[in-house]
Image (cartoon, rainbow, N blue to C red; front, side, top):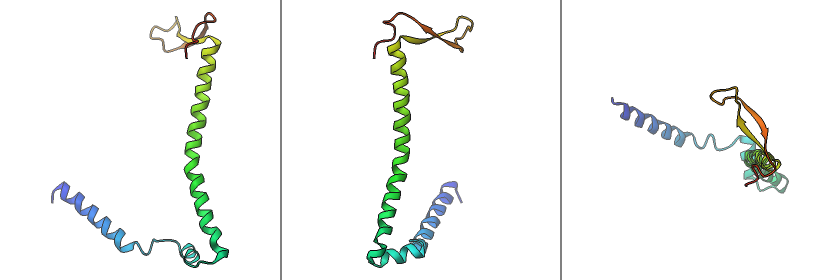
Length: 110
């Protein structure tokens, strides 16, 4: 059997397994029973699922936006204060850097 045929066979077997077992893994028994009954006392369960999913989706976005804003403000503050990084004279390849402050107009372009 060729390598491609083996890959296709594995994918087909996985799809067949998912198709056969889809009813078994639909939901945990308690959640499935609670949602199938239109009981007003259990309506909060669906609302709880909704908000937990929203919070899990928002967390990576908030972390990314927060870190990005922090770094943007750091760069902006350094540009406005006239500080800029220049290669050290001690290092021939410029691997080490030291903070050099030049005139008040240095680095003010945004």
